[in-house]
Length: 393
Image (cartoon, rainbow, N blue to C red; front, top):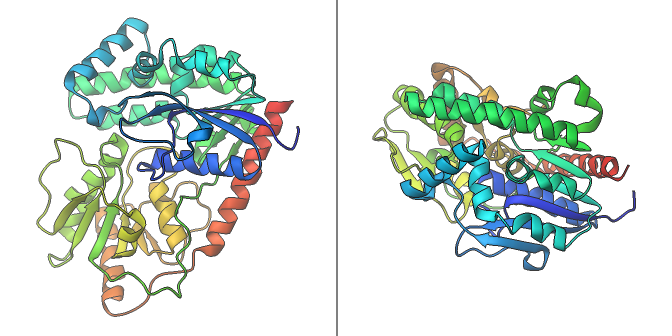
């Protein structure tokens, strides 16, 4: 493989200056690492209306359109569903096909050829199978999508949603297994997901250890004044994320002291149920890093989903203390000393009480995240180069 390669990075959402969701943060981390290695990368994808790419010169915007369930009308959702049923596609792929039909494949082909095509999740090649014929392909599995969809089905509260998610899982599994075979190399974000690929994929897969865009906050810097006892942040409109938030609010909160101040930041679903009195819903915050540092401790309460939790990475980079479920720490072999791992509500609440009590008493619980950040960046660079080398052969 040449030292520098020309890459097409095909992604649902092109990174913007201030990435919002975990998916966007991961996209930006991977793109930044590829460009830092000297590769010429052109990102192809969509933008939300009103946004601009973080790197306009390195981006080809197919359209500015909303492709997220949480922000579109019921009529648009029904259009997506009708299209999915007519084309025998998952809804997640059908909506992308509607948005990019006649433009997406053509845009990539017009700017080619490329030394390798980076398929950033299975959704776009699921919508446009022709993409895999435009060059050697490497695949990024942010989540094992069919597993996440089946988890959504298992947690669904209505028979209709259960059936729709089960259909999604069935169709996504067929797409994923096909792409695992067609791709020259597959990256996952957690070792547990890599194991799901099967033993035959061991030689053509690797884990991408991610970093978020936030830099390490030196311990010598005056800390942000504590505004909340416990903080949670995430994109709660995504069903696996909301499953964890719902568990925390229903099963953990009643076990916490009534004087604990709990803040929940991030996008919330339109049908958000009532929350306990000590919980504040603060919505999207302008600076997630500042919010995290303003909390005495964090609650990492994931109960569903695959891949790696970006908020866990951010907490580790910042050296912030946290109570975390085992699922929140999937993909990490080293757990910081200021993390408390608990999977049951009483144990999780006890961990939070212990951490908040220590912080209120004046004990500094933060650690230096610099070593963690350095390890993640080095391992990310190495894993990316392995995949690109496989694409060149």
